[in-house]
Length: 136
Image (tube, rainbow, N blue to C red):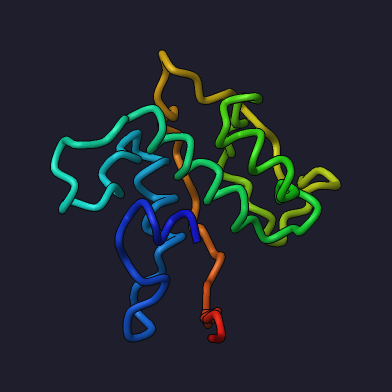
């Protein structure tokens, strides 16, 4: 959901575009702010956008144990805790993976951007969305 909010895009498009893949690719190339909705122009806080996008990526991790809790998400978004960066080991099958499927390689802070890394294929696929409406 965070990726959708910041980017202004749907999670999928005709089965060929996957929002999480696109943001992960931008993160890997050091261009994560390229995911920010262009309709915002320059009217946004870059640090806040980096944090929201990084948290959104963490929430898309293949291994549920590697995803932050809702309490953790709130701590990240409120700035109470730094957001750990994700390397290119995203939880798909590899014999050298740790128990949690991910190693964290740095932190997002107000003075740093998400580091570029050489990324192998990011395989998380978002295939459906749920819409919640309030009655009344």
